[in-house]
Length: 224
Length: 224
Image (cartoon, rainbow over all chains, first blue to last red):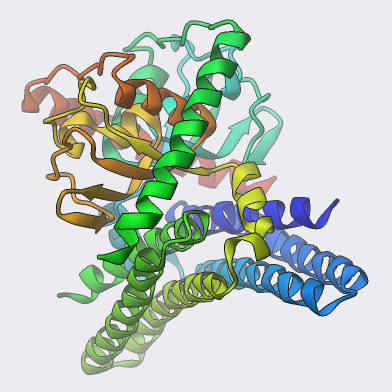
């Protein structure tokens, strides 16, 4: 992996590991907690790999400046995952001794919910990527349990089957919507597939707009 | 605030502060970085307030056990916000000395995007809550710039106006969808408003299902 890939992996992991940590407390799951500890170990490996690559490529004073920034981001991501590890350590208390966790999670902006996919659901047989679950409901799938057991932070290619159980993180509105789809009470609305070249053109235009916007914001917005 | 409220506030802040920290680097914004530092100070205050309340209410050995758990979660949330503070410290480098940040953020699972609301957009004149932006597109609004300046982590009651600029965090698919709505190329689909009692009934049923599910998962799932 390149340094850039290592850093991206660390950022993604630092986000999913916190969600998983809270989910493990919410559902009192020691297998999820195990996964959190595994991810924390992975983060340490990623941090060492990043350090090693960074030190190897530091030649000049100029390099050193830029590379020290990379180490700072890597260490921030690592500290976030350490915090996740502290959170799961609360599993040593039985659930009735940590009611504050359930209360906190049920009042936070982003909720954690467990949802079963009914055999009547139009989601069945489709991949997470095809459904665009996060874009359509705002719910990010933290974990899936199917016949093969648990998968954490599943890939877009994973297919949903009847009776799969998913653990998601999202707003109340989003999770309520997803429950309707998962129960088969509401038909999934698939995005029409637009030819790729149209998307490319619009995306390019939007990116250009975004650059101009960002210049504009930097110029005036940042002075107030 | 009760201990529970303090803890919920700390959790929510620990999430938004990381998004804001990355956004400040992405858009080279010192005002956003200022806000991150302000939130970090708020977190310290919240942590001290939590400690104080916890110490006041600890009477028995039993109390002490449960309350030490609360302090652990509070300290995890605080450490996450410290990491955010480290991330914004990279603003001391000019953008061309930290290209790895933009690369990392453009390849991460969750992207940060800046989007302008066109006067043609059907979002104009509606509140964030009415639009259910996160549930409909998976994009969480990190910040809004309107005539009054910047608002960070805006409330659901905030109304969107033509020419407002929003900074969001979401997947590529979700942000692409939001761009379509914001540009007025796609009409916003408002959820029909369902009478409250129907929602209550279904919600209660779903919660019951979730509890059974969670028992089931605990029983069999956790043994594998």
